[in-house]
Amino acid sequence: MSAQPDTAVEVDGLSKNYGPVAALSSVSFSIESGQYFVLLGPSGGGKTTLLRLIGGFIRPSRGRVLLHGRDVGDEPPNRRPTSMVFQSYALFPHMSVERNVAYGLKLRKMAAPEIGRRVARMLELVGLAGYEARMPHELSGGQQQRVQLARSLVLESDILLLDEPLASLDAKLRKDMCLELKHIQEKVGITFIHVTHNQEEAMTIADRIAIIADGRLVEEGTARDVYERPRRRFTAEFIGDNNLLHGTVSAIAAEPGGRVKVDLGYAEVAVDATVAEGTDVAAGDAVSLSVRSELVELVAPGGAEDGARQTVPATYLEEVYLGLTTSHLVRLPDGSEVAVRRISEGGDAAPPAPGQEVRIGWKTPSARLHVE
Image 1 (cartoon, helix red, strand yellow):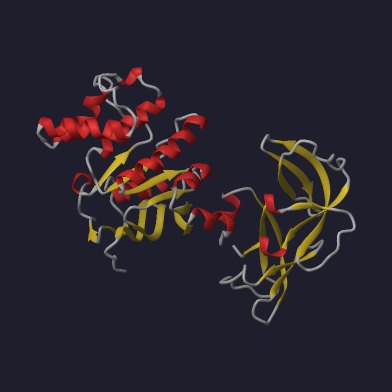
Image 2 (spheres, helix red, strand yellow):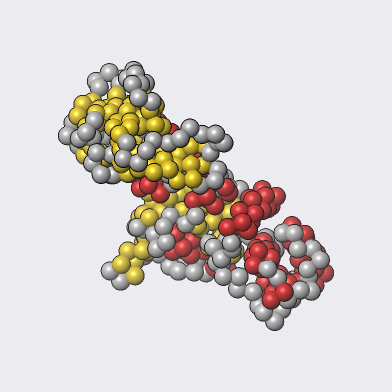
């Protein structure tokens, strides 16, 4: 595997074991220079381990890390073109904002006038101009995180590593900081690698997302790819609000552009073959279908079956009002529950009564087929 000139990071077969425990197993991907790249997945899945391997804070058991085409396996963190923003603010409590940001430059024995220019420029960039003399305890959580970001950016590394940088912020501030981080990354133009378990955070900032779980790379793509076209069942469960239906392949169309038929036990539904492209299935295989909740609807009684829509029987359970959206929960004949999500509108028609028999449906291309 060779690095291309515009590749900032290349991870090649990277593994990390702690005794018999595999924290990371043969992960490979590459990141283009100037991308905002997000490592997304559940806690304990290996994201931070991967980030620390890229930064040189731990050594791999197997595999390579190449930064701008150079194998950095034997280089410590201070010799790599990376800097790190940690989950905790990690500011020196006895130092002012200005001294915190300047600390790394002083360790490099940079001239004082240049330090002053760089620090002022970075504080302006992160929106803290005028806060130079403040102490960390005089700042809000979001301001402290900005100081840590400025302290890393001022080193002018090519690659910035961010380990759950927004985890300790409240929901409103996290949303605001997401947008600020993206805007700052676009201004400085360097590569950001950001670890998070929060899918909304990832969708807001990422140019590309890698799903990491159980120490493995599940799949990688743009935010739109992993949300609208998940290839793996894990991704469908983890990203967005997907409904999963389980069944068995009953038939596979021979002609190109045909459909895969899936027997759910209480109904037979079809999936476009183009949706299932690259999925190797045969009649009798156990599979799952994923359909996002906003693409499912309650079907009017007596609705025509025309092949463009798949419908199944269900029992209505309840309506859950969530402000912007309203979810209608139904139970399928196999006991699993499905959510039908809609934008809330004033004057909505009354929902079915709990326990009422209904049908739900979705446009055939809206379903994705998963074999894992």
